[in-house]
Image (tube, rainbow, N blue to C red; front, side, top):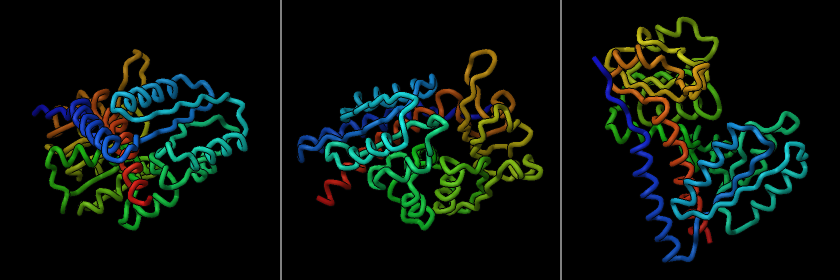
Length: 286
């Protein structure tokens, strides 16, 4: 068996086109252009690449984007003051602070300083609570994108066994909540999980987000399962690798996301969706 490759790049292209059309309509009918502010503190090379891709995607979709580069020695008070100003800026509907931050800054304080309605990453405790209670307003971009992928593939989630490997606040926990709300029976694994292979082999839908390259091998996958690999790891060969050993997994899975070209493009597309939706909600409140 050779799995069907899930083309995240193509799905993201379609979503971005939808956002561009909706943004143009919002601008023409209401004079509102969805606006995203991205704050980059320091000069982390990976963060610079991510931010550049996000800003480019915004511009291509016709969104208003503001990129603010702050020095690595920016103080906590200075960063919070900048966020406060953006919270009050009516032209900005979404605020994203690129993580990780320099070690002297508190990610928790920074995230909580962002107005929940402008928290397009979906990390604010208010948005996490709404998701937990089945009333999502802003959903973290990566889990949101994965759900869009599963919907596009018509993956039957009601009654399915879903296993999420990785329990982060950014991907694992919100992913588990979304799958649960879709009617799946969900197992959330972490670094303490005993016999990870046995857990994974139960999964009709397997989502892996650990940051550990090649953690899940083909012999840990149920034949025909849908495998979503969230990992992006640069190997010694200079190439990007996922958290799933692709060569062995592709022979067992029914469908699988490649790395690159799978989840990554969808994450950026959902950032645009979240910014658009924030602008639409803002207009409804006005």
